[in-house]
Image (tube, protein in one colour):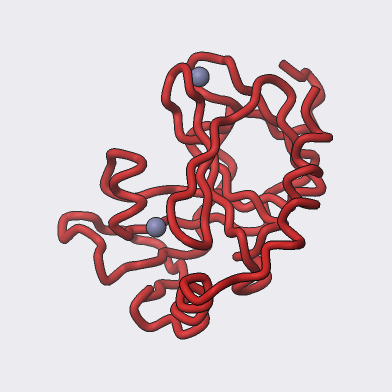
Length: 173
Ligand SMILES: [Zn+2]
Ligand SMILES: [Zn+2]
């Protein structure tokens, strides 16, 4: 584990996989969609988006799972902790392959971060309430996201993807 206070560190529950980032997340948010409920086993997902160029895995390698035509998830194959979500195509600036959406709860010190947005609020469970002013967005009123999913089903150019995956691998110790 790094003792450098300028580094943001985290990892899975069992410790087989560790990561670090050298800059704070670009954004943080929650997602209330069905996929996020299923994959976390909880009411919603809480994520922090780091630029891939300031993020690296320092121990172990997450197992990857294609959770949607344009998304993958990474998790520890030993303890099952979900570690990240990543878009495989560029939808918007922060929803693009060069941003890794780390599960906030896997950070060693998640306390400093507040939430910037709540997504898929149309499927937010009725007893979940937030008293913040974070932006609330409906997934079913997101034409850019719908277009990206539609394009994926009709064929997507993944040529840039290999480069990015190699960049992740180069970060591994
Ligand atoms: Zn683990
Ligand atoms: Zn979701």
